[in-house]
Length: 440
Image 1: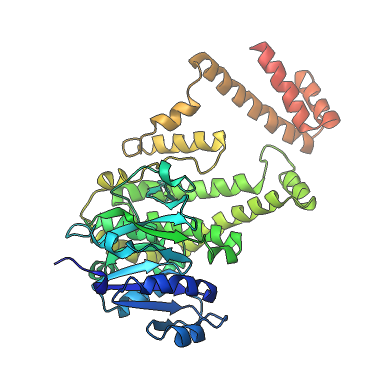
Image 2: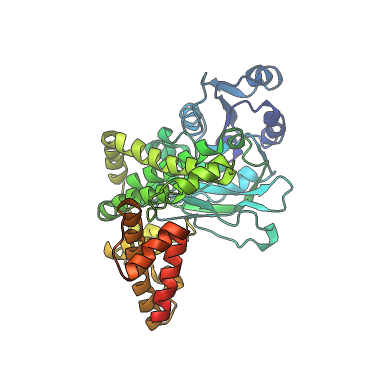
C-alpha cells in the first residue's frame, strides 16, 4: 500500500523566522500530514512562544543555539513518527499537491523525491534538477528561468534540501545529512550517497513549493556562505569518490584551491611588487577587491579545515564507501556539467585541463568540449603563442631581477632594463612583446 500524507512527518528548521512561520504553517497543516515538527535553532525573535500559542499541534524541538541546517533536520527525522520525512524551509509555501505528488514518485528503488521550487510569484524556477562540478560545487538547474521554458527531468543527482521527501528508514541508515556541513551542499552529499548506495533520486515536477528566496542565508555574511561552499565541496568529494578517483581528484582539488586563492588574491607573481595592485584597490575602497581577497582566504581556510579533520574524515569515508553499490562511472552521468568553469580565467582553465589530462581523468570526464574552447586556433598560431608566452615569462623574470640587481648588462637587455626604470615593468614587457611579435 502506497504511503499517504498521513504517513509523512514534515520537518522545518527555524532560526529567527517567526515572520515566515505564519506564512508556511497554514497551507502546510491544510495538507494533513501525520505531524509537523519545527526544530528551533535558538531563535531570539519569539518564535517558540508564537508556536506554542498559535500552533499547539506543531511539535517544537529546541536546539538552544544555532546549529545550522543539517543537524536540526537529523534531529527532526530521528524523532519523527512517520515512515517518510519531508523537509521544507521555513520561507517556503507548499502548493496543495506538494506531498501527494512527491509520494507518487516513491517505490522500492526510489526512496527520495525532489520537489520543484519556484519563486514566490510562481513565475521563475528556483530548482528544477541538479548538476555537479567534479570538484564538488553543486548547482540548481534552470535557476531564474521562466517556468514555461524549463525542461522536464526525471533522475537527479541530488534534491534541494529546502523541499524534498525521503523514506525515513533509508535516510537514517545513511546517517542523514552530514552535521559537519552546518549548511550548504548537505543535500548534494546526501543525493550522491543515495545513488552510491544503490538508490534513486527523482524530480517530482508536480510537487511544487514557492520560495521567498534564501531568507536565512541572506542574513549571514557572504564570506561565511562562500567559506561553507568551498569547504563543503571538498568534504563532499572526499567522502564520495571511489578509491581510484579519490587518489587523483583530492590532491588536484587541494592544488586548484590554492591556485584559486592566489588568483583571487590579486597577487602578480611576475612583478616584484606582488601586492601593490591589491593594496591600491583596497585603499581606494574597491568592494570587489575586498570580496575577492576574502574569497581567496576562504579557499585557504577551507583546505586547512579539511586537512585538520583528516582522521575523522577518513572514518566517514570508510563508512560511505562500505555502502557502495554503484561505480563512479554510473553516477557521473548525473553530474550534468562536471567541467563548467568556476573561474573565468583562460590561464587557470588551461592549467586545470593539463592537470586532468596528466592524471588520466579524461576517461572519466569528457575533456573535449572544454579543451576545444582553448584549442580552436590554427596549429601554427598556437605554437607561436606558446613560444611568445615562454619569451614573455623570461623577460618578466629578467625584469624583476633587474629591479633588484642593477646595473643591467649591455645590448638589447640594457635597453629593456632602462625601459623598466624609465617606464615601469609592464610597459617594458609590452614593448619587448611587440618586438618579439614583429620578429616572428
